[in-house]
Image (cartoon, rainbow, N blue to C red; front, top):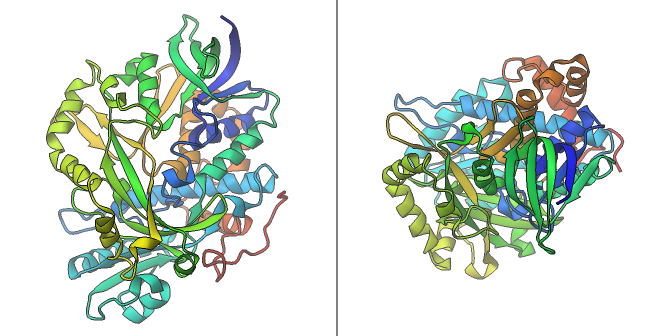
Length: 511
C-alpha cells in the first residue's frame, strides 16, 4: 500500500477545512497540505447554500443568542462574542479579496438588512429589553428599534402586509448585515488553495482508519470510492472538519480527548419561493422567536437569499428528527456512534430531552398546509402554490458528560484537540461557518503554538486580520477602523438595490 507524506491533512471539503488550509498556506506556503472529501464535489454537505442559514451570523437578529434570564435581564455576552468573531471572518475575506485570492465579493457575500420581528406584548417587552441591552455597546450601536406599524411597513413590507393594526409588534434592524453563500465561498477558497503547488485535493475518497504512530505522526487510510483501492497518508497534523461526520472520525482516532462525546442529530427543511413577483418584494432577513422546546437551528426566519447566483426566498427551517449525521449519510450513524464511554451521557440526554424529541417528531409530520400556516404568521398572504419543500442540512449537536445529570446537550461549537496538538476536530453547529476564521485561528494557536509564537507568523496573522491579538469587544476605535475597511472592501455599504443594496466601488485588486 502506497504511503504519501504530508504536513497537514484536512478531512472534509467544507468551509472549516478550506479556511484552515488557506490560513496555513498563507502562513507557510511550503507546507504540504492534502484535503480529502468523500463526496465528488467541494462544499456539498453543511457548507452548501441550502444546507445552512446563509446568514453572516453576527448576533444582530438571532434572538436565541440573547436569552432572557430568570432575573428578567437579557444576556448579551454570547451575541457580543459572535459579533466580534464574525468581524474576524470579514477581515480575512477582505484581505483575500484585496490580494486577488477571492473573486469579486458579490460572488459570495451581499449586504442585507438583519431584522428581528416579534408580536404579542410579552415578546415585544423582551425585544425592547434586548435592544436596550445591546444598543449601548459599540458593536451594536447602529441597531434601530421600532414598535410603530408605519415604520415597520417601511422596514419589512411583506411581513406587515394585512397585519392587524392593533397587534403589538416590534422589530430591530441593522443595515450592514450580510447574506453569505458559504458553498460558493468554500469553493472559491479551495480554488485558491489549488494554486499552491504543495496542495492536493482528493475527492471521492473516504477515511477508513486513523492511527497515531510512535513518532506522533498519523497514518490515515483512505479508500477511493470509485476503484475501492486504499492508500495511506502519513500526516504530521490532522484536522477533522467533516461537519456531522467529524464525531465518528474523532472516535476512530482513539485520542483520550474524544472520550465521552456523543451527538444528537437534527435535520431540517425549508419552504422555498422562486416566484419573482414575491421574491422581489422581500429584501431582508427577518428572524423571529423559536417555539418553546425548539432547537436553535429551527429559529423561524424569512430570508432573502442568493444561492449560486439565483435569488430566492426561504422560510424555516422546520427541524426534524433523524439518525443520520450527514445529509448523505447512513441511518445507522447515530447507533454506530454509541460507545461505552459516551453511553451514559447519551442516555441521560435522551431522558432529559423528551420534550425536544416530541417537538422534532411533531415537526417531521407536519403537512405542507401546516408549514405554510407557520409561514403566514410572518407573511399573511403566502400562497401554498408559491412555496415548495426542500431539505436543509443535517446538524449534530454536542452531547457531553455532566456530573449533575450524567450528560448535557449543547447547541454551540467546540474544538477538540489532542494533548500533543497533532489532531483537531470541530464538533457542533451554530454559529458555525460565520465564525470559521476565528475557530480555525484557535486551532492554529493550539496545534501550531511554537510557530504562532514566532514573529513571522505573528506579523502575517496581523496582516491578514488587523485586529489579531486585540479585542474588538473592548476596543471601540479598532472596531470602527476594522469595520470601515471591511464594509468598503466587501462592498457592504447598504443602499437600495440588489438584496436591498447597491455596492460602492470595491477596494483592492479583485479579478
